[in-house]
Image 1 (cartoon, one colour):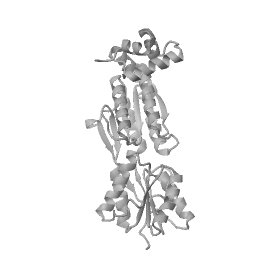
Image 2: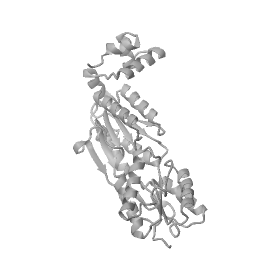
Image 3: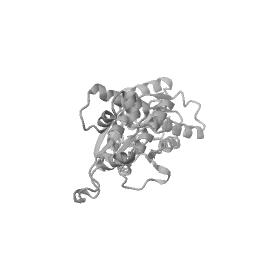
Image 4: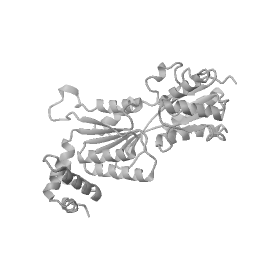
Length: 352
C-alpha cells in the first residue's frame, strides 16, 4: 500500500498540514520539526505523487549535476557541458513560458557514497526537474541498491535521471563510456610497439571506472600471453598526480626493467612522468607513458601524451539534452560513448 501524507504525519508526530508545509518549503517551520518530518519521509520512502507531483515536475527550474571532484578537469568538462544546455531552446528568442532556462546546481560529492545519497535525497525534496550523475560508481552492493532506490523515487516523482559515464541502472537514461575497450586498445598499442614489461597505475579499487579500465588492460595482456605478472605490476591509488608519482616509484621497485607505464587517467600520467624524470629516466626513450581521457593538457605535455580520448564535452552536452528531454532517449535507454586511441610522442618502441 502506498505511503500517504497522513502516514508521514503520524510518524513525525505532527499534523498533515505541517508535513505539507515542510515539503512545499513555502512556510516557516521550526528546524527540529522540519528535521523530524524529513526523517519520517526518508524512513517511510514517501514520494509525492499524483497531480501535485506532475505540476512540480513541470514547473521545476532545478537540475542537479553530481560530480566526484569539480576541480578534476574530467568532471569540470562534463559539468560545464551539461550546464551549457540549461538555457531555453532556441536561445534568447524563445517564446516566453516555453522551455524556460533551468538552474544547474553542481553537487560535489568528494567521492563520498554517503554524500552522493544525501544529494539525491535533497534533490528529490526540491522536486528537481532532472539529475545527472557523472563518473564511475562505487562498487558496493549496498550503495548500488541505495542509488537504484533513489533513482526510482526520483523517477516516480517526475524527475528525469541521467547517468554520464556510469553503468546503467533501472529508471535512468545512461551514457556509458567504453572504458574497457579504450584501455584494451591502449595496451594493444604498446604491445604492438614491442613492450612486454608494462606497469599499470590504477585508480581506487572500489570504482567501476577503475575496474573496467583495468580489465581492458589485462584482456590485452592475456591475449598476448603476458598476464602472469599483471597483478604484481599493478598499483592502485587516487585519480591524482601524487598517486601517479608514488605508484611509479613502487613499480620501479618491483621491476627496474619496466619499459612502459599505463596510467588510469591523464592526471595520474603527469605524476608518472614526474617520477620517471626524477629517477633520471627519459620519456619515451627509457620508459613509455600513456594515460586515459585526453584532457586538455595532454596534447601540450612534453612529450605529448599518448592517451585514450573520451569526448567528454560532447557527452556532457548530450546528457544535458537528455536531462531536459530535448532529444530522444537511446534504444533501451542506454548509449555507448566510444573511446579513441590518440597515439602521441610519449610512447615509442622499447630500446632494451
